[in-house]
Amino acid sequence: MVYLEITGLILFIVLMTLGYRKNNRNMMLISALCLLIGLAAPEFISGFIEGFNAVRQAA
Image (cartoon, rainbow, N blue to C red; front, side):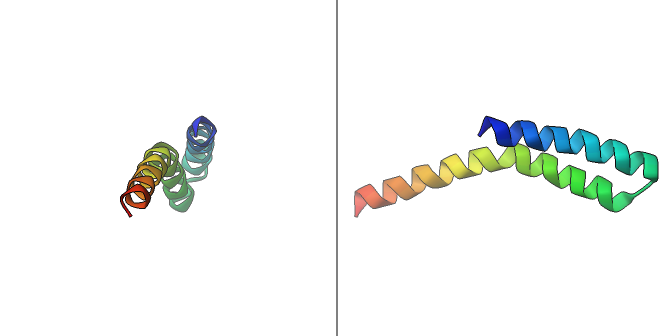
């Protein structure tokens, strides 16, 4: 999970810098999505696994 966060942060920095220098809004949008996925995905995945295991134990 830590690797996903680090990769998302590095992609955000690189793509945001390139998008700003080239004045490319789409690249900056993709960089923001990389940051969002990198920071939100690990919590979502752990919550999903926890909920899935709770339902499986209740049945």
